[in-house]
Image (cartoon, rainbow, N blue to C red):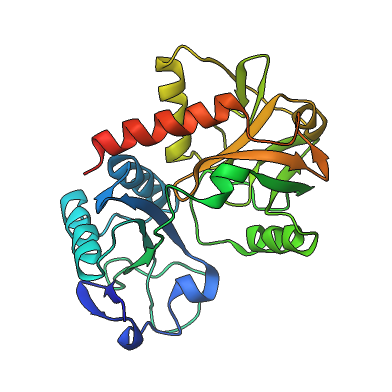
Length: 286
């Protein structure tokens, strides 16, 4: 049985309890982060903490735990749950004021709820999808306008995953005003004539921590980058495509809406980017 973290205590998962009036439950009034664990070490922890602070600030919430204290909790969960490869999930909500109300509770009287738990994922590095590539479908992007905040409002991305599953695809790329925004839980990219193309940061997409690292490593490797919008038709006509996220790193996309990209197999640049990302990230893991 897993040990989880709840509001300052490490407890068995089956004893963890949160009020039914917690705003995270009632209104998705919370944010989250997911940090990868490789060889018992955390990948991109500093970036995840920085984004956590930003997400909380954008929702007018304070950060209820220090960076060092949060790092200690991560490491304790890794140790207690014997995580070699896997994920640490963190969620912070506005807490429970003891009743339901659209108006924010007084933060001086209502403590925030902090939840953390681990997930083992032994094939994190050698995932089948990284070797074979994934298939995606395109769907309309119907999420709220502030996708740059990593909130717990994940119903539409979940619906998108299910839309893909129903047609035997792996994921969905969301489209707004004719252009791809991102995947249901990842950033989206194409490669054409040796150039990596991905949408620029804005309110329309999540500012991926893995995205930031991958683009930095690509620049250091002298790869050409262009941050701009692209359409599904352009993606299908690309030489390669891929996604990035904390749980999938760099994963090839080989088919969109039933049409193969190039010859329908993972491309060399995508594979190289994954190698570079893993090599460099493991070196700096903490």
